[in-house]
Length: 278
Ligand SMILES: Nc1ncnc2c1ncn2[C@@H]1O[C@H](COP(=O)(O)OP(=O)(O)O)[C@@H](O)[C@H]1O
Ligand SMILES: [Mg+2]
Image (tube, rainbow, N blue to C red; front, side, top):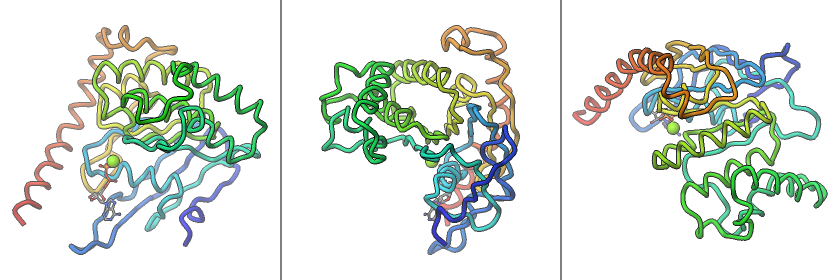
């Protein structure tokens, strides 16, 4: 089966954008069958900022790859409500560098629109807007190797939004950045998202990041990944990251999610230790 054929697009009754039912993914490896995701069912509301948090190796990237159509589920179903005509289904932002090194910042950000043969004036306008929103206007003609890691991730974000997808899939996009850059990029992402209200599925291993950005947080169990709990984040928007983090209610939510995650992180560590011994 072609990966993209595993995703059915339909007119899911709004406001659900992505519906997973009993999604399971196993890999055949030299050491036997590895179940990465086990029976995950999930509804992601249209226009929501949906976070998935879980320990390393719990299947987060696998889940995102299936949603992006890069891989197929072993069993279960993925339904995504169809995008408006002419609009791409999804754009992905990865943790590491995924920019084209031979293209300038502008060309990277314009890539999706150029591929869709949009008129030059439209590309200039949209790309100009997102480069401005990410503070990159002055660097439009620079090449990725001339930029810091934080700036390169800004380009990835500008590129993803300029492509105007129905859904943004983000796989730990800020985890390689230092704390200060992370905070600035979180704030910029919030500002851009508040303008566009796209459906975002954002994966992180950081509880702080999940509570700062998200409307809902799915906590995953350690390997194999299952849904442990889905938590609502009650904070209003627009959000100011620093102000939010100073609130007692923020600390309480982080604390309670950590309480759930700690068992899973410990269990992931024990699995690593067992594999090391074996
Ligand atoms: N292509 C693959 N072949 C074999 N095993 C894989 C493959 N991709 C992921 N896995 C395994 O599936 C599990 C989940 O991996 P992954 O989705 O990358 O986790 P996470 O992103 O949460 O760290 C891990 O045990 C990993 O080793
Ligand atoms: Mg991953």
